[in-house]
Image (cartoon, rainbow, N blue to C red):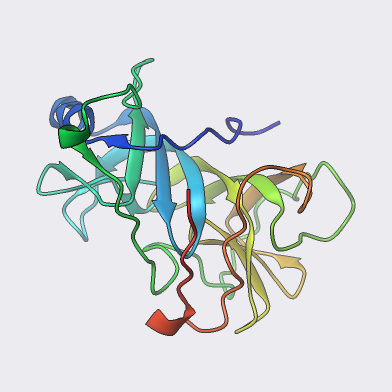
Length: 211
């Protein structure tokens, strides 16, 4: 099974621990980062953190970890070398604000890419559904190999399914950068909340998922 199991999202993120972890994080370090957004819900990206040439911040799998060395609002947990920033802290050191993604994550694939990754490997022969808990291994020229684990979110705009802002499929056909895909649990058979289906890329499409 590719990638980590879907983690529990802490009820309050440890801002101080996240800030300290970011301050000591070197580009090229393997990390596991948990994010929460209104559009894509909770998801984990496991890969190599490095400074993006385009946005000038530390990123993993195309998503910013920090802004001016402060934890990005969507970042909930950052694990490096066995460290875990989800330890309980005083309420004064916490921040529970969720953020909304108006569009797929920076670096999200376009479906006209001519690359040909390995075939998808799934735990079931059933088509990918909105609400499935999935783990996808992606290979991207800019971000390398990384794993995104979270709840699949379908969009009615162009019949696509995404996880964490990365396209998994369009009209049932796999996205080019998807190297492996495992359905960890079918929709309705796991405890993680389903973000609403995406009906528009505008602000009005954002849900109000509670965690």
